[in-house]
Image (cartoon, helix red, strand yellow):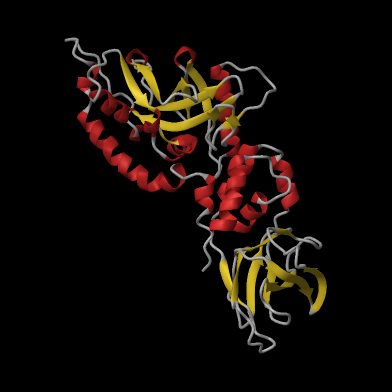
Length: 391
């Protein structure tokens, strides 16, 4: 979420719980957890049965025992007491929570298995009663936890790696080798299954997968003065097969955002061979940046033609771009934006989840006039416009 509060810069996946209540750390984490469940895509079937041991911050989630361990947003590591791992309450997974009680913000860096914890301890023989866990060792965010508890059999994650010894030998010396092999093999499998979701980069990096599309400017006047033969469109993205001098894009939202890499001298909207809207640049005011759909909203089966003339192209030369609405369903962008309210976390999640399956929706949300103030969203806009490549 990349809130910036003085000296604290939060991760873009941080969750703002709101200021309606005063929370202690534990209740703040539970409130953030609830928000994360509501916003998870695809929807997870999460059932929190009970708090197993409040003093140890244990949760039972889909029968998996999860131990939440806290730190602040300033911390780079967590000092974890070994005594919190015992015979009666060994968790399947540790979930790290960076908590800011003053601002009601929680970020979940990720999870750690008991096998990974054992390996950390084996490298820290100087510590007897505790384990130093770097925050960077927690991977996958809250998403990886959701995938674990939704898709895995409870027996597939070894729960008990510590055994009590009658000879008072270190608990870590009695790790079950069979479970170790299972855990190692499982980790390899999980990496291939969950990597695209659990280790996804930030929004700016996610958006970098979208590229523009070059289109040819037709020489309708047979002029010899054209100094530029093509231009680049960034939105819409859902391209169909084009014909000579006709580029076709499918529209899935009722108010698409039109975005060109280069400035334009002129743009028209044509329906049934009749011009119904036009915008023309002046010498001091070129047409740049996002253009918001200026006429009535798209409906199923609607069809329009954009006639565009980029800067530097003489009168009479242009490209026609056909916009054809979906035959099935058109997303009502206003309704979606109202459901997101001004919650930055919800906007980022909604944009992120649609980048691959409906990029035009993600672009429309990113450039919406109603988007909340956000450094990460502003950075994503600028990066998309200036750094996008064109095929």
